[in-house]
Amino acid sequence: MIFKLDMENYIMGRVITGIKGFDKLVDGGFPLGSIVLLSGQPGTGKTIFGLNYLFNGAKKFNERGVFITLEEDRNSLLEQAKQFGWDLAKLERDGLLQLITIRTFELKKGYMEQLFSKVEKFGAKRLVIDSLSSLSIKIPTAYMKLNEVNDFAIRRFIYEFTDKLKDINGITTLLTQQSSENLVDKSDLAEFMCDGVIKISFEPMGGKYSRSLIVKKMRRTRNEEDIHPLEISKDGIVIHDIK
Image 1 (cartoon, rainbow, N blue to C red):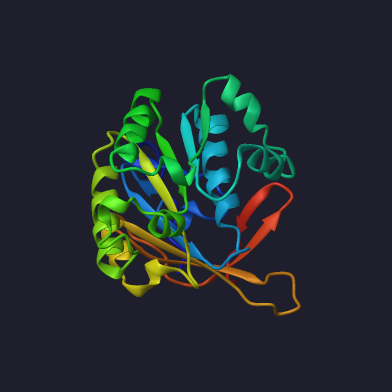
Image 2 (image 1 turned 90 degrees about the horizontal axis):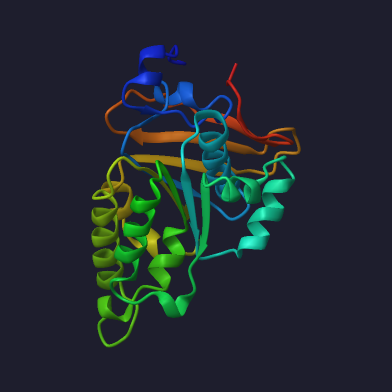
């Protein structure tokens, strides 16, 4: 079943992603202030989804956004965006976007709180963090026992990290996560702590659509639960109907 878009939801308490075919799956957009986990294998389009979310926010709704990455450098993101016609450098110059790369040596306890404070002062309405998996692997030593990354340290870090995200006023966050070969998969804490969970899968079928998307949960709204084909088109992410 596909929910009919409610225009009131576009105005009251919704953040419209602008990603073609997606917003109707969550009854009009992400609930304002929510934290959404986007999970998928490498190469499924998680980073592109995040950039698409920020680009649409800036261009269509004049909303400031911040992209924080531990996996790619700034130039790589700019080049990746260009293939879809997204001029992220111009959005930066216009004061609508910030691209922030975090290096491992910067991940000391208290660093993320300082970064979140800067995000809030920037007036961002949209935040993408790419990725929770890398953060969990490179967690500050203050969370570790005997300087070893263990399940307890990861759980503690995820809990405190997502809890602090909720303190940022008026921002709707998209967290990406690798769904294979990462330490976060040892527990479902990340999914429990987040308001929404979206999963992207890749199955080489030889046809036009090898990627698919499902909204596993979305608090404070109805969500469509069927699996939908996902296409990475020349204009960005497109979610297709299952008909």
